[in-house]
Image (cartoon, rainbow, N blue to C red):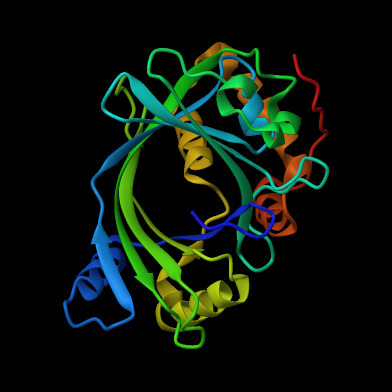
Length: 275
């Protein structure tokens, strides 16, 4: 995870196709790849994305609550938030970078909570103080295999960039619904050097740009929106999810607003009242 001086995670995410991802994995797996490049294969991991049971409060605010089973009675939980609720953003900025806060905790598998006591970080308070008593529900899971490439950009050899190559599917907790396979390429600056990160991304786009589509969603967002399209949200909650989508528009960055306005034909009335 990369951090800015403000303690924010910064990342860039692209969607790509299977052949491009596999070609990159093979390329970076070569023992002759170079002195400043290191390839690490990671095991497959299953993420569970949670939200409140009825009103999707986290989704509507641009937040993500993710759990990952640690193989014991404990589970790692991560809460990801916009940069700032006073100047909120969902999706990438004009440079294609997402800036997000991240808070982590280890909780029991039986009942992960959206609680300030669990996260033990006062910086999380503005985001969840008024909804921390809400009951969470496991809405969608994602099973992904990830390869990590660490390198020093030619123009910034004192900086470290991490590129993640990832493939996987979303599915409903009961297994009734399963998505097609998705293929991702993500970039992060491990030392918070944003100019070096942008230079590395631009160089990569010069070579592979035709096979890349900038992702304006996090994987948690993509999973929940896929579940809704697949019919996996109960009928009596569909209108609640649509209302949450409307509310989210208040937080969109310009880049994402332009994309969604083209799809939906305009902006909608908004309401951030917690019910």
